[in-house]
Image (cartoon, rainbow, N blue to C red):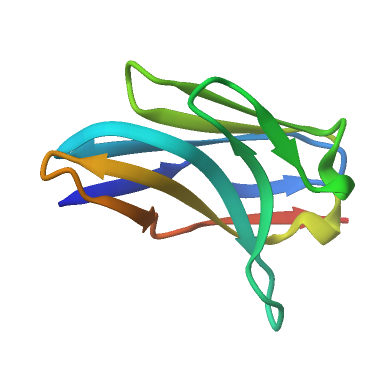
Length: 120
């Protein structure tokens, strides 16, 4: 069993910053791609940023230059530094990871989500 636990969400004014963190635990051999998704009310969940085990990153256009994803392979963690936040960034943010577990099964896991609210 693998668990992803997010932290760091909250309420911030427009233009402010937040840092989200996600820690993976359990019977983990290797974590491949990790990512952050978000889901705003009435909208579908969407990819915000992802990072491979080797450190290659990918961002959705509207967060480029504002958000930075990073990871620590030794600690099985991924973070999302969010700067210059806008009200339209308000959403529940979810951590996601492709995990090879101790039974050599490759599965995709989700965290429980953390609320980010940006006030205008």
